[in-house]
Image (cartoon, rainbow, N blue to C red; front, top):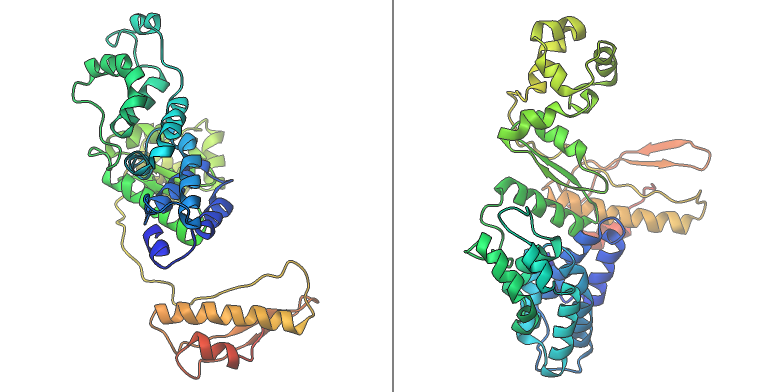
Length: 375
């Protein structure tokens, strides 16, 4: 998406403004990751300073550094830092190194290093791990003061840190696909999604509901599914409705693990004919398969005015915009002559419905001029 926008000539400021407006408040880390992806696509020529687009690019990239280095590296952020290091103009290199060093934080002293024992002290401080993870793309002047820390951590992992510019090799494929799905949905439609991944439909649907707003990805491995389900409140199990949850709680069954421990016959006596299915799903057993489904047979578009509108020009303008959206969607689905009824609601809450059919395959240039309906 970022590459397509860049090659289409969409100005950088416009691309970034959309991301900040749609994603910024909901998920700052996701916003920064998307910004890094847009910035690393078709970067400016470092040998051609003074161009407004290039100056804007370098300004936005430098501003993004502290936010990216404050967290674990992502492939998009790591590739951007690597590009900055290798293509930074000489007059800006000192400032870049100083900003990277400030973002990494203060270097631990000799006493703090001497007190840490990898074999008995547990996990190292978070700041150390962050510098370790970013070290493959950080410049030598930034890493030199941290060399004692890196040497200490290298004793626990002689192979060194993974290259953050590429996806982690041991990363779950399904979780990676879920993250790609979320990123593309947010960047293309401005809508965040909650993605649940699990070995069965029940586990995946339950995981999706556990993702906090505004969105995210939660993957549950098959070996961990039963233990993960057992700790959830019984009403959080996908397929358990409010009445069933209330019935189970009257008998002290308030956790999915307690439900899974009961014999299926007992659960059936409590919940009726759906009891055996509920007992199986509490144990993570679900024989349903995920099958791809076609797009819905119908498609609709809607425009909601913030207040009652009596101005015919405003209504017609909104209608023409809806016609363009609907025509494009019908063409994408290969249904150029599908019937297209329209609905409208008047200020007096009266509804009207007028069926119509496309006289010709929908074209955004001709349909807008010939549509007589209202919405």
